[in-house]
Length: 274
Ligand SMILES: [Ca+2]
Ligand SMILES: [Ca+2]
Image 1: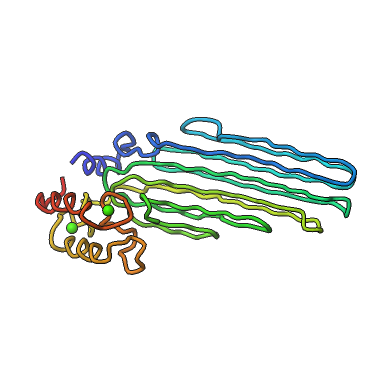
Image 2 (image 1 turned 90 degrees about the horizontal axis):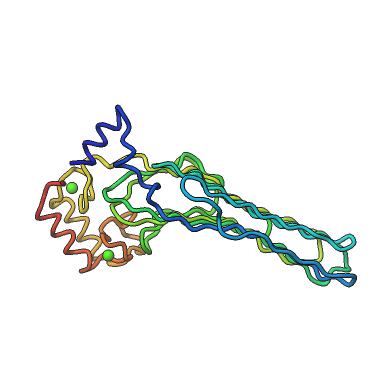
C-alpha cells in the first residue's frame, strides 16, 4: 500500500523518497579518445580519457587528442554526460574522429569511445518514456541506446526515435548506451561522428500493479495465468511470439520456466496486489 499511497500523494506533493530509482542506481561509464600516425617522415600517437568522473547526480568526462606530422593529422574525441534525477536521466555520449593526410601516411587511426551503464531496481511495475532520442552515426561509427532486464531486451535503438513509452515489471534493469568511432587510414581524408542523446524517464508506478499482475488490474488471477502459460509454453524471451518485454520472466533470466513459477504461484494465491 505504501507505493499506491505514494502515487496519490505524488500528484499533490511529490513523493521522491519512496519512488526514487536512480538515486540508488549503480553507474559505470567511460570516455576515451586515441589516435596515431605512422608516416614516412615521423610518428605521433596519443590517448586521453578514462572512467566517467563524478557521482550521483552528475557524471561527466571529456577526452580529446590531436596531433600531426607535416600535412598529416589525426583528431579523436569522446564526451560523456549523465545527469541523474530521482526518476529521470539526461544522457549524452558522443565520439568523433578525423584523419587527414597525404601519401606519406603509412598508417593512421582515430578512435573515440563514450559509453555508460546505469543499473537500477524496480520493486513494483513502473511506466517509462523517452520524449525524444537523437542517435546518429556518420562514417566508421556505431551508436546505440538500450534497456535490458537480465538478458531480455526491453528496447534497443540504433537510430533516432520519437516519443516512445512502455511499462516494466519489477526487477533489475540496465540502461546502456555507447557512441563509438573506430577509423583507419584508407587513403583519403575521412571523418566520423557518433552521438546518443536522450532523456529517459520513469513516469510512475503502474496503477494497482504488482508482481504477476501482467494486465495491471490489481489482482493476480486467471487473466494473468493465461499470460504466464503463454510465456511458459514459448520458454525463451527472445521468441518473436513472446509478449513484449517478456513480463512472465519474473526472475529476469531470459526464460519463462520453473524458476519463475513459484513467484507467480505465490502472487496468484495471494490474489490481490499488496
Ligand atoms: Ca491481473
Ligand atoms: Ca525466468
